[in-house]
Length: 190
Image 1 (cartoon, rainbow, N blue to C red):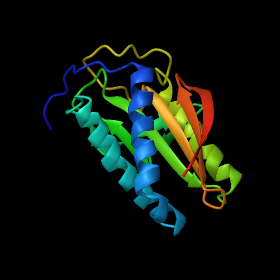
Image 2 (image 1 turned 90 degrees about the vertical axis):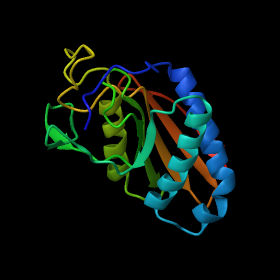
Image 3 (image 1 turned 45 degrees about the horizontal axis):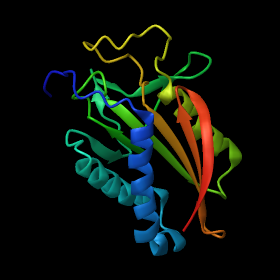
């Protein structure tokens, strides 16, 4: 892999939110039947990834990729986060939008977790906790994003989304995370 570099710094959460919501609205129209027949979350995230990448290309973000269950090893290690108790937790997100490590500053933009409403609450909470950790600007409140090295643990995603599918009600509950905190929620029917 090539040496990471500083790339375009796309840190505007409102721009990224617009990009994500356009993709998600297209997803709801294009994939409504697929959603309703009980297709796996993995398949649904893959379908959303195509649309997110398409919207990104249209917006000029040609060096970014939407990847499903991406677990690239960096420096020989699987991606990890630190939880609130400084415990190291290996991660594989349902969907991420990133530069695949090509950039140090501006690498990680959007992370997504999807669950059906019938999943146990503790499983949903683990996903929401992961989104909080991944959207923190720093995993240890020290890493400065110096533009030269990747952080030891994954952090710095601009936005995180928890998508909870309620097929019976034909809607998604979308919870958004920014800077390691819950930012807001909305319901989107399909």
